[in-house]
Image 1 (cartoon, rainbow over the protein chains, first blue to last red):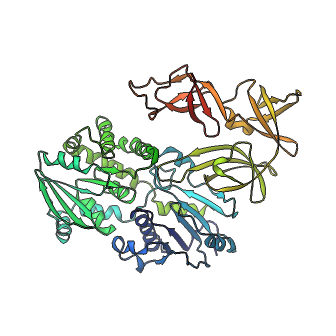
Image 2: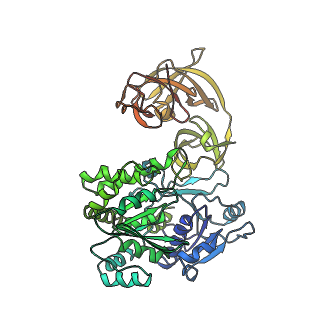
Length: 362
Length: 185
């Protein structure tokens, strides 16, 4: 049964299909974990490739039920809240079970993150689904108070601050992951990008930089270390979400991609470069510009244009400008802006709070 | 059946057993997100207005209503008056035609729709030609048509056009999506 109005749901079902990378699973796993551990909800994650969670969220099964989602799925007992993540299309048998429930569940369609303005006006409008009669609501994660916000655990910022202010913690963590200790003479960065990202041009440029640059790149194979001029590249094993946060926190700059690592890098309070998921008809560039319109306001005016240009550069295969040195030359000012942006995000309720608050309004 | 993307102001669909007329339909598409349409519906039984957001591929049961060709005549207070070939006049409120105001011009042809004998909406031609009254100058050399900018129509409505479009140009617009189609020669 769904709880009375003005209360939040007790049980939550999240449905997720892994499309091509780990991003969808990463976001759904993170949300599942947070709803179960912080909000004490009974959560079931229905996912078509549960094995991909083993590495990134190894303890998730201790807090929530992870249920393989296949054609053979039997689904009869619907939760108070059903989250259909990233347009994964709920099967008919799930919809039928939802329709049969005495009090219908809250049905949320959790969409991909976007900074585009239209998401502000389309977010969280309960709409009667024409074929089932159930109320369905599109929920858009985003960066403004008018959207669904971002996933951010309650203690994340406190943990981050402690870690960033404690060099010994950083050294210990690095040692445990076979990484060199922090060195004030070096610039450290993490790099996680799609195969189309212009890494070769980036590495060329950094190899002739005036200070040593160390890049830490989580990969699934071919681990090792390679030095070219000023640049040393460390190919390290994939990290859990918890350890990946620490990698972001300990670096001076983070190259990230997609959605989950992109959000975590913003919450790291350090400068970032975003490799966006490529779409047909260059639709991703509209999304990139929408983000930059918001993000760059956290930076001093003289940096904004060039900063936006570096983001575009990181999403082009053909490199025409050598802006990476500019980026590293301005790391201190960029860090100040990245901190301001993080504080702006921290001031807002996170996605799980907004989601549960929204359920109260129905 | 119609999918959400095909619904236009004036169409009537059945939602939760009630006939709902589409008053406004805004199409939005993004990178990885599903394209969505934000609707303003009016319940034809109760007269109440509702907002809704649906994915473009969601299916709706639509109902075919009586319709006829009319011409827009004039504005009278809050009402807009349309006339058929037999000089019958039909009045619609601003709410009823909110989504059409951006293209509205005197003597413009529309199709008017009736529900139980009452006019409920008008639909413009699929394509209309309008003059650009303001837009920023184009950057030199860009003739690809891929770089877009905003341009203002006489109604004040702003539309995305290729960078090569200039003030005074006449452009063809698809009224179903409010998208630029071509520049008229």
